[in-house]
Image 1 (cartoon, helix red, strand yellow):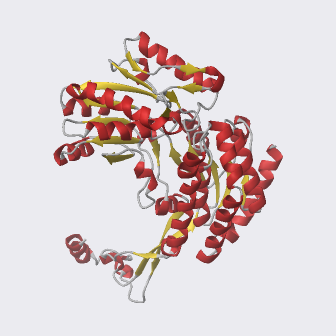
Image 2 (cartoon, one colour):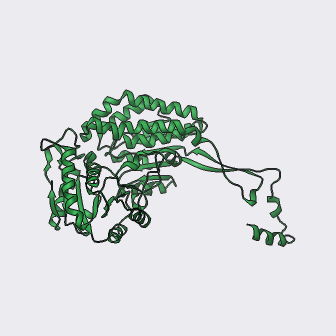
Image 3 (spheres, helix red, strand yellow):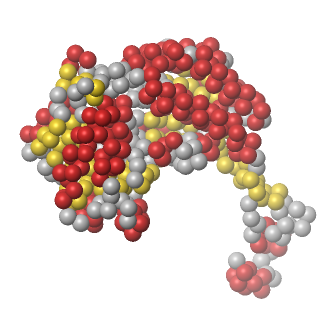
Length: 465
């Protein structure tokens, strides 16, 4: 496999110079080709997502396939504008020159995708890579093998490997790929593996975009509509069985609202994910594999041992890798469940006495990928946004910021670096090249040596620069 990987990499290294010269029409044609290929494979994609994660068709369509169609359509609509050189203002030092920013492809890029949204998170950065004019080598997750197989087949039937190629396999394949001097690496996954990717990239000074994770908190204040908040949090927490990088990880709530929230959350979950008193397994995803099932089961056990109170849920079924929606209260800051991203359908609820206490709780921890605020107080909304740091935030909702391609999506600190979607994805896969067009009236010669007769000029420059 190493020989095949190296051969494809060498071919893409040669081909990147040709792709660098492609215009918008050529790239748009390739995006349309990708969209049509996805349409041709739709049924197989849905079947693969059902196999790997027990995702129902509707959830797969909305969170995976339609999401990519929207990304492609947005790129097609905006690409000519994105590619157009952008003029910038002059300064006194280049008063008569033309100054522009050109967007050039980075070259040969590596895209490593995770297992939780295995189709969306492989194809989304690919859309940006194609729009920016790059070659790409893709590595889908081996933990979602059905989707990996379909993606590999789709790419092989649609693109020449000297432009786009997909490699299935375990971590040894990722390791082999990371040894190569890519021009850019786009990784989505855990913070721990993100550090490995960044270390490998550093050996070749490859630029990176890291879409990681973290414990995304929710703050609910006194002014919030608790029932509305509970319903939105129930959906955001439990879509894909909690295996979402921006899922609400825990709730911080004013202590006198805790009981109402717990009651409303339970009622909302029953409305959304239960049918005649039973968890609706046709619309509720499974945990990806036995290892992660055991991790979540063990984490719940440790949380309860440490004093957390099980308010509802907690049932687990190993035969079909199902963990029921679970809500915990009496969770202390030192509880083991607060030490790592949960990435599953378990929701700890922590009370606070005043808003500053909730803000301080968040700021003592790593910067999250997302932060959610439920409040009808503009003052409190602004205070939280101003005094906390997160990759992105929603006010009075969850998850939806990821769906707007006009917004950058990305982390900060341990939750990632760089942005994706829309023009932000295009820029991630592009080099912004500064170009100055000097005129015949350029003033630069005024600062050429000899200098001994130019002290007056220096004083003048100090005043105007």
